[in-house]
Image 1 (cartoon, rainbow, N blue to C red):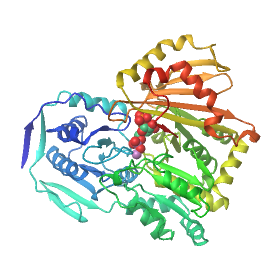
Image 2 (tube, rainbow, N blue to C red; image 1 turned 120 degrees about the vertical axis):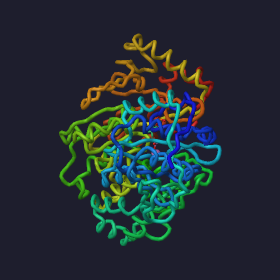
Image 3 (tube, protein in one colour; image 1 turned 180 degrees about the horizontal axis):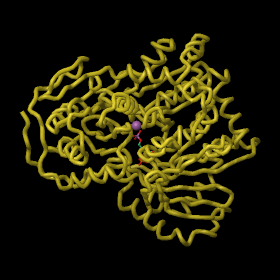
Image 4 (cartoon, rainbow, N blue to C red; image 1 turned 90 degrees about the horizontal axis):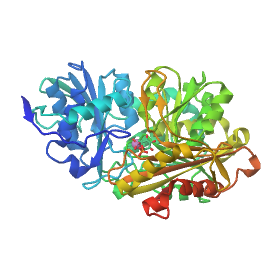
Length: 542
Ligand code: VG1
Ligand code: CO
């Protein structure tokens, strides 16, 4: 029943910030998915007879690749596969299931917040036994194998029914189809005060949770409406659709604008939240206030003890380098460690495993903790609800009081999407070459204090990751960061991150873009964004 199939390598299977992402037609090329999955297995040792978790975000081509992954896993000697019913597992739920059932690892099929459909994006990522994204050492090994692959192994089995819960045999390997929500919902019940949340909803508190027609729909329905008693209609766009209804399942002020507008309207709900394609991102909006992800991390950290799962306090905080330093001030006050890592959740794994940090966050709408090894959208929303319930205050009051205590880090990200790759590379290369000459330079009334190309020295395993983003730090603590995205599938996306710290509470009410205007102009003066990209404004501002 096991076949060995001769194949030719592709040269473009290099995993990016989070797995391999390509357009669906690329994944549909002969043996493309098979090659990559076999390359993953060829990079691993000791999985014979062990458990592999498989699931995805339900996007177009998910079901087909799940069947392939099962058949290749069987042929390579896994003992058992656990797969989410309907092929569904959110990224954080998959991480939890890997940990809970002590799996060898897991394959998650997702291109996250990227659009889905026959001509849109697909993705494959591998998570290790700690439940977290494969570290760079492993993704490098997978890429090397993919460039040299000559054959893959696959079991000749009938299509597995992944819609019916239960256990079947596949060429000697057990396939168990599990409910994708139950284990995750139980974990959330352990971490948060569900009784207090039930009371909150009973008291008339209204929220909207927009799953953006992606994977968190069933999780939101079960947890918010069924277990917590939130009103019918709290969950919106809760049917996972293969094309996400034609939208970008990206919870930000552009793609979740309808939710934002509704919460801001007088008759709208008190609180709104949204999550992305694979359920690891979150956007949080209170009546009258959008909470930036960087602030969200800081506020969760400052209030962590209010949630039962974190009542003992936190060991430390980690944030990606471009994320604002708002959380640093909380860490300092709490007297706990603060770590700055490159972009991408894979860099948090070692810190979490070593117990150095409890909370992690990224400016890109990612927040999480040591409960799993991925960022977790619904977890962050429940954390906010727990804080709201415990403090009995509005999100707006909580945020403004936080600023009054710690100061406000004005923060924004400007994305220039689908720029021609050579133009984007030229911008970065030229800037990198000039870094040494920048300190002391005056731009728009600001003086450059330091400029470098961020390199991370992992304090746990000693590994070094270089070229993780260009940082230009100004006197007084403001900074800009530039880097190229590692998740896009066409052209290059240039990200500009801008941050300014304002300690004076009387100046906390300024519009963000206005507060950052000088820095944004300085970034263009220094990096020549307009002249290089030919764009006069960013595609997305968050
Ligand atoms: C982006 C974000 C990064 C995040 C990554 C994966 O990467 O900036 O913070 O970890 O997406 O998130 P990049 O390389 O495009 O900047 V997800 O929810 O897309 O898996
Ligand atoms: Co995601």
